[in-house]
Amino acid sequence: MALRVLIADDHAVVRQGLRMILSLDDDIKVVGETTNGREAVRLARELCPDVVLMDLLMPVMDGISATAEIRQDLPEVEVVALTSALDDAMVMGAVRAGAIGFLLKNAEADELRNAVKGAAAGRIQVSPDATSRLMGQVRAPSGPEQLTEREAEVLTMLARGKSNKEIARDLRIGQQTVKTYVSHILTKLGVHSRTQAAVYAVQSGLVPAGELNTPEPLEATRDHWWSA
Image (cartoon, rainbow, N blue to C red):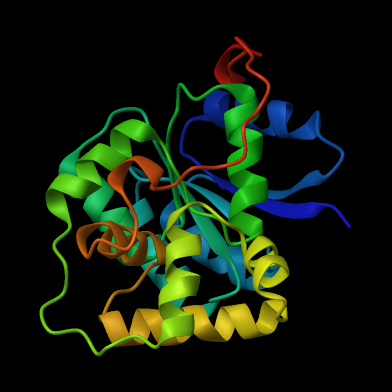
């Protein structure tokens, strides 16, 4: 079954470009579009997409506020934040709101499709530039509750860009069990997103910084969704 995607961006040409490049993949189906954060929340509730591609700067309600509301009401819906320029406040805001991915709008076409598929699978998708911003801004929570050995193992794999399915396969447990572990990890660390938890894994020494968010390699392409 194709992954269901909702696009939220107030620029028509951007929505057209996103829809066009995603439509080239039979595993992805765009089920709706909107121009503001408030409508993104409403449509997410109505359509129950797997992933929302969320522009951060929109009228009526910004993308960060919309992301927080969607993640609170619909925890099974993942959000990939999109922006034309990196800003520390926006990066931090999107991550704290619960976005699992953060991409610049000049991302390559395959990177965009991979982000959608990775988000649906529970895999962190953050551009290298955004990752460096996070490492400089996110601070490890003070006195977090101690993780069990298995929770630390799941956190390590999560931080290295493993999806729920991959973690389940490697640990020989069910995907729902992985989700339960992740929920416990977020609660114990006092964070709101998998991305924040991944940064904590680096700061606590569980994962070397160079191994943070290391997705499966893709065949390189020079095509960008906005030039399709």
